[in-house]
Length: 242
Image 1 (spheres, rainbow, N blue to C red):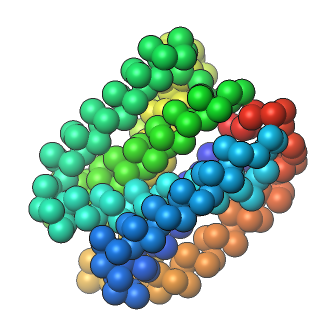
Image 2 (tube, rainbow, N blue to C red):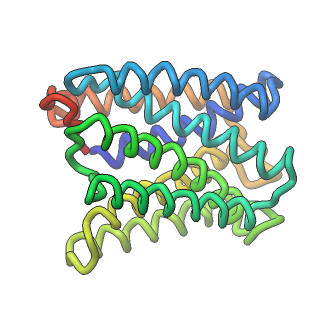
Image 3 (cartoon, rainbow, N blue to C red):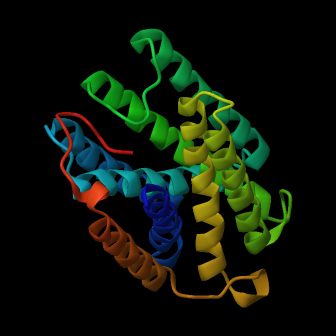
């Protein structure tokens, strides 16, 4: 259920980010500043909370996906860095954050966050990984990248997530590595799914309105969270259920 809600959150991030930057014509830079402010507010509330609150937690996740969407688009399209260079740069940044986290804390947490230090690294990793995921999704689908299109791109990343799930069951790799691999992969899956819903028919999309799509998927997120007792239940101080 966690991963279903996470995929919805990444899809909302794609459609919501595009709705502000393109539909409302705010532009990538302004939209990034708006969503960065949203992220700062929500993550501050999350870190200050002494127990798990599903509304705050998932608002922070959505904030990381929206700011990740507009930041990646700004790097790729406004700064013209390109999908390959931006993806490589962001991947290196994700690895660097995880390495520093491991060196400072002695471990990379993923399923149980019990200190404010780990929580800061947790959300920083999520923020950077969601930005990386946006770049990977665009690189896979766009004609300046692999040119697979949105639907084939979504199938590719869904398949990779299945591979990660199999490795998780077989326990051939450290669980923390697999968790963060899945976290990165759900972002391009959400990006390609969001683009499939909103892009014009000529580009292989269903041409649903970005604002409408965002509202519908956000509603689906709320239903999934409310339907899952595990996602609703309070956790211990600083313990964020994954």
